[in-house]
Image (tube, rainbow, N blue to C red):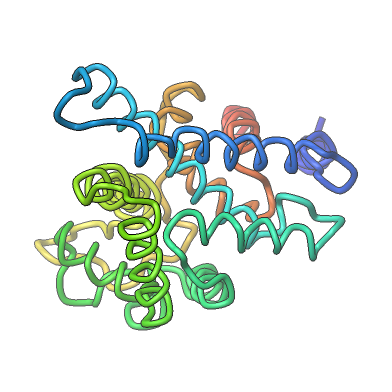
Amino acid sequence: MTDTDEKDTLMNKISTKNSPKGLIISSSILISVLVWYHALFQIDLIKSNWFDIIGTFFCLEFLYTGLFITCHDAMHGAISSRYHRLNNAIGRICFSAYAWFDYRHMYEQHWRHHNHTGIANEDPDYHDGQSIGFFSWYFRFMLEYITIKQAIKMTLWITILLFVFSVSISNILVYMLVCGLCSSLRLFFFGTYIPHRPTMIDGKFEKIMPWEKSRSANVNRWISFLCCYHFDYHWEHHRWPYVPWWDLWKCKEMRKKINSLQ
């Protein structure tokens, strides 16, 4: 079997054209987030035992990450490539549930990343061309996606939670703000910082990091899933951007087979 045949076989196996799998997985993640969202309303941070408090936090943070990955796949049309309006509607709902992000803005920014990967001031995910420090890069990355419209929506939602649903401020801070922040750090670390961090040469970093230079984790698929829903298989994502997250490990395996034949 040639490289082309191998790639064609893979694409046929993971095609989402007529498969409901994307809808099932995305709906499951969204519903799971809403179920665990009960922490905002039911857990008492003073009276509840630590197992419930910490366990719920980690479960919700992991599901928040999956929620964003679902949004990301929607921007690639991977939730339902056949029904575009449904695909985009799911993306909008999940972005709102994650942190009230604007779907159109996120879509435009994300495709700038794919079209100008690793070019400072053109790729919104990339560093500013001056510093590749983790936190300076992270803050710049976040500022590229946060909008005034989103901040207003977040403020209104928090106000409703506080004064309409009587949710304690401590629960909002822990299970919504801190949990969401941890999720964003996980996504940034595995999906941007590690894959796109430029190589140091003679004490200086490379100014441009095209997607072909993206790094991909060399871990098995279960560890990759637990790390960030296979987002660390990043070279594969850039090579096959329309492949949904749950099939990226297949791309990783195919790439290994092709490399072993060369």
